Image: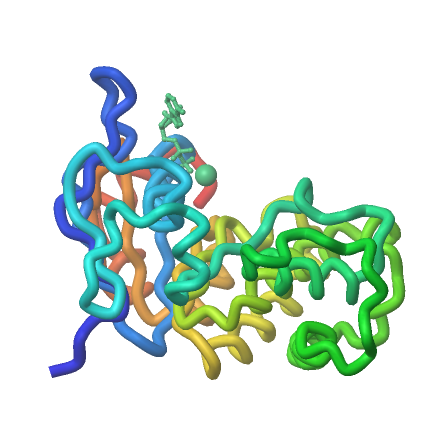
Length: 250
Ligand SMILES: Nc1ncnc2c1ncn2[C@@H]1O[C@H](COP(=O)(O)OP(=O)(O)O)[C@@H](O)[C@H]1O
Ligand SMILES: [Mg+2]
């Protein structure tokens, strides 16, 4: 039997009396692209925050590669193999794309931390890996550009690249296309297709075209609860899902 790489059992997250997530069950199979969708405020980002350890769960359990990680600290999760894209706000705007990637790799090593004022040898393993990541992303030509001079779409791609520096086996992407123009979306689609060769991907996404084209499985949240789970086709035909999205563009 194939085991899920990630399994969430009865996860709840409460803020006071309010449930941002309630009894969420989720199984993400290895080597798949799995989407979490749902109307605004459904609890998608809260779920990701629980998976990444950025917020503590109120109830329930999270297993990664069959090990329980529910109480693991946020900084431990990339080391365990769970990567999450950084936010544009965590880019160093005045540093080059390559330096941003190198620092993301270095930040994983607590002993060194963010000691970026030391000169870096050209054979530094993080630099080598940063070049590999850039190549995979088709962004080699941007290596020496300062992060602040990139377009919004390119900055969002760099966020994903920074997460890849941890060599994650599970990559969490929260709305990778948000704020992008339609012209940038095919690039993200082709990137996700390439990345699935090296890791399992769990993403939150509003773009229906992207979900239909690259996702094997979709879980739908509404008011913090799972209301549907299946292939993109099954979920699109689900009456509860159609109702959840009434009045809102999917
Ligand atoms: N720190 C918090 N304190 C109180 N309520 C929160 C907090 N974070 C999120 N929420 C609430 O939880 C609900 C789900 O939010 P979120 O997970 O961001 O939804 P989504 O990502 O699906 O749009 C929202 O109603 C939001 O206001
Ligand atoms: Mg969100």
